[in-house]
Image (cartoon, rainbow, N blue to C red):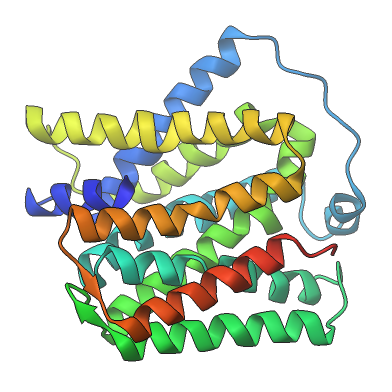
Length: 277
């Protein structure tokens, strides 16, 4: 729902960075309240990845990194990509995140570069190229739209590269409460907050409650009840649903080549999610 909501807010003069600030601070307040109302779980032992990065980046350093990349950058870049290029293009580029995760995992020494990982990154790259070259009605391909979309994918990847070790140590509620609040505060100096109209406030409330706090909560509950493989398969439906909304609500009409490119990106994302690494 973020794509149509971003369009509706943009039509009412709300800038991407302002959307991002309200979204982060609002959802951070919800998770903060939940953390205060329930007893925080005991910290769990860090994983191998967490032990390997502890010396280079402390716990709160990782919180700050997640706040900067996963909240301030990601929450701003995604609506900016929607505004500049349309929902379909934004979500295809967003799903380059698994490719960023593979590259980051290799760079951090978590996995080794193999023909499979190189092939998946190449497939995602080709898919992005086809989507950009294919275009379509309602899709605006420009350096700005592509850059914002790729930035959204890079920011999204931080939830896997940085966030997973934080969730192990702090639990998801405390992790999101800290990262969302800090990320929102990072954006306050450049946002135009003011007092929103009733209509804008209602749209922001849906963005905060349904598309952020509730979505994160349901995702966490799902991971607790499903294997990572099954959860990743279900999560890959997100760009498909986003494209359906783009066509049905926003009137976008991607070309056949763009559909092929999007399918290739989604296939690469799914294969990366199912990778034993």
